[in-house]
Image (cartoon, rainbow, N blue to C red):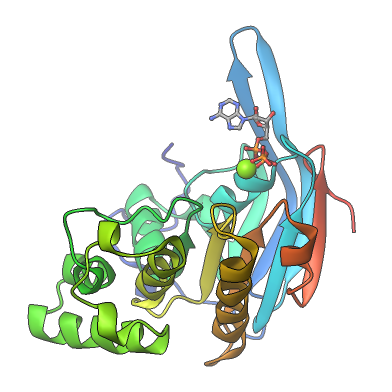
Length: 246
Ligand SMILES: Nc1ncnc2c1ncn2[C@@H]1O[C@H](COP(=O)(O)OP(=O)(O)OP(=O)(O)O)[C@@H](O)[C@H]1O
Ligand SMILES: [Mg+2]
């Protein structure tokens, strides 16, 4: 889904792009994303507008099929809108080359999923360290950062456990630690408590609240079906028929 834009050569990195400062961390204008299903077109995003400030925990709710996951994917440059503009952390995502999009996903965004998506053959610390290792850090420093983050999420004594030796809530804590290892500006979570009992889910929501409010202005965006989970957020946004209904 390469977009020609003449902005920069594919080989140039994100740091070469001058970023706007003092802007909201997310600014989406008139986003449209259509999927072709056989003869039929589905408008997952239908002219969606959204502005999000940093240092917030934002929840996104709405009926099934409303476009919540699609919006999250567009915010994280996992998907590209057909039209409209989406600026995240000062970067106009539709104008990035594929290589820059991949750097954006790797360095600016942390992803948290309903089913944790941990690598089963790796220990907790190895799962957390992996993005850092892929980024070229030495094993030694990636390991010490991973262990510090596992401490941070309350799993300092589980760093050598494999996912199968952890509870669901512990696996999600490992995934949260992994999402933070690159110090992303934005953390995107799709139904992070969807596979957890309500008590465990509460503790994950408290952790996500802390993650949003710590540091120098991170944004956490969580998609959820659970109104009680959404109530933890600073702001709740409803998506319906591919648009925001606040
Ligand atoms: N890859 C795809 N190909 C075709 N259609 C898609 C694709 N992804 C999503 N859609 C369609 O786009 C619409 C929005 O989907 P999306 O996954 O964003 O909904 P959602 O709000 O996350 O729903 P849920 O709450 O069930 O997860 C749906 O009608 C869906 O069928
Ligand atoms: Mg979804």
